[in-house]
Structures are given as structure tokens and as C-alpha cells.
Image (cartoon, rainbow, N blue to C red; front, side):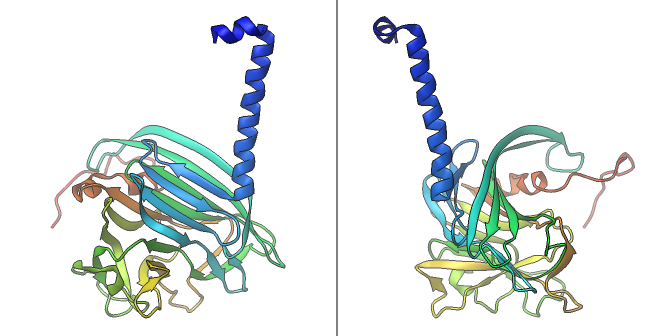
Length: 314
């Protein structure tokens, strides 16, 4: 620095630094929007979510540099024929972060820390009737979550969802513990989570949450959060001969249908889906310690909770 100041006047040095800084910032923005490839890291930098937001909307997940999920498709299909996520263009990418603490009177701990990084994508489907939608990703030190946001717009005032095309494309046939619903979507929904392989989950399977998966990098639990005015998510496999697609074992969201046969979700915009969540722990006990689902859920809406007292239950 001293040598640089000796060779150049201070004003020239400052101009050079500002010019380099501006070029770097512009190059970063241009790269994100031109390649449509964006990366979100957890606050500790150990969990990575990579998103492809041009053409087919996809994401992947790495833990400690090791892939857990390969390219996994995202999308929503509606009764009027609209398909969001099949062929998109990126309109805007916004980043944010949070590090707050809130009080939980009835949980594992009274003070819960919510620390995450966020990537919010504004997307437009390429079609004869283009529609915009958003996907929000959050990365925590103990997992990731994402959700769809449907803003109010022409042609989307009211909608009927017929399929959610969310995928979880695991990079190998990992061991897992799955709870199977053998009698359709109705029943007691109490299962034994029996050990098996991901390829044991077939297209006709109805797998309850959470699904616990043991990967070489970490244990992962698939679950959802903030389920409000949406169908509950189950999981199923893909319809291939060996249960694999391009070497990956792909699981897809399988939403419970409405009892009135009006699709899966019947609602009006603006509307949010639940969070699709992957809790990540290097040891299985870390999954129990996680507050990820709580941090992704809507805060308590009861103004006065002083009457709620802890008790015992079977």
C-alpha cells in the first residue's frame, strides 16, 4: 500500500479502488442473472444450496463439500394447465440474513436462536400466459428450507393445485428409515420407521414424514414446516425400473388430495406453500436438538399465553 501511494497520488489510488470495486459488484450481479446459477451458504459456510433459475427450476445441496442432493426439480402444476417451474426466467434475486433470538415457553429451550441466510428468487414462467412466482430458500447451520410464494396477479386470483413437482434427488441409494401408510392417505398415521434403502420407496408408495436418511456426509430428515391452508406432504419414488434416474434416487412430493376431489389445494392468491425442510446433523442426535422447524413456522398468534401451563402426557 505504501509503495502504491508513493507511485500514485492518493486521489488516483482511491479512484482505482472504487473502479475495481464497482466492476466486481457489477460482474457478480451480471454473473448471477446471466448464468441463472446462484449459491446460498449456511452462516457457517458448511451447507451449500445451489439453484438453477433458468429453464427448468432446480436445486442441489452439499454438506461439507459433499453432495447429498443432486439436481432436484421444483414446480407447481395447476388445473388450468399452468406449470410453474418447467421453463423459467429469473427476474430478480435478493439476499438477506437474520440472527435473532425469541422466547419459547414450552420447547426444548426457552431461548431459541434463529440464524440463517436467505435467497429470494422472483421468477416468470415462459408461456403464452406468463405468470410470476417466487421461491425462497433459507440455509441454517443445521439444515435448509424452501417454499413457493404465489402473488396475486391476473389469471391467479383463485387456483386449484393438481400437482407439486418438488423433488429430492439423492446422489446414491442411501439407507433410510421410512414410515409407510399402507391404506391410502386415511388411517391412524402411526407407523414403525423401518430401516431400508431409498430404492425401496416406489412410485405408488405413500411415505409419511419425517423420512430419515443416512448419507456419508450427514444424517438428513425430510419434513415440512408452517403447514397452513395447503395439503400435507408425503413422499413417493419415481417410476423407473430400478428406482433411479440418471444415477440418482429421486423422491417426489406427494400431496394428500382434497376429499371433494377439487385437486390438492384450492385457494386464492397471494398464497404461500409450507416450507420443504431438510434437517441436517452429523450425528442423529443433532436432529432432535434442532429448532429449524420452529424457526420456519409462523409465530404464535395467541396474544396472551399466560394461561397455558406445562403438563404431563402419555
